[in-house]
Length: 168
Image 1: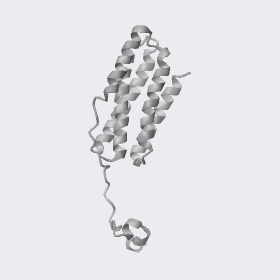
Image 2 (image 1 turned 120 degrees about the vertical axis):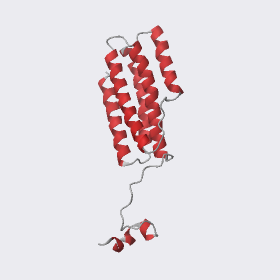
Image 3 (image 1 turned 45 degrees about the vertical axis):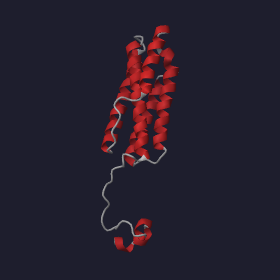
Image 4 (image 1 turned 45 degrees about the horizontal axis):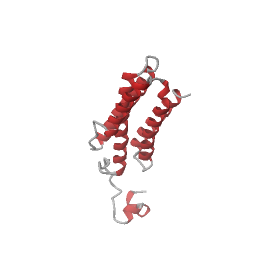
């Protein structure tokens, strides 16, 4: 069938929309699009989490430091991936995170005054990771592009695997 013979089968074309005889241009998502905004929120939460883990690594007991470093490494990789994706969409990715990054650092610092920063903080780490996971799920829930959905799903899987590896 020629494209002109199947026009009536596509609602946009039947209503006078796009001419199906020429391939559509690959469109970049609009930076103001809610889908991109939600990925921006994931990026911000990841930056906040990095701030907290930097302090955890600094204050961690020797035997817990490799666990904290593994989480930090993963989050830095995720931040880089998210930042690159957002930039490719014309979205200016945040570089500092939010106020909660400062809160995360302060909480770790204060806790280190009263207790060791070791595996005894894993329950709080898991709570924080669930907050990040919620942002990923929220971003995925709005119908992302195939590329964005693949990125989000990959990160979510890695985050889930990391939490399972380090929790009893």
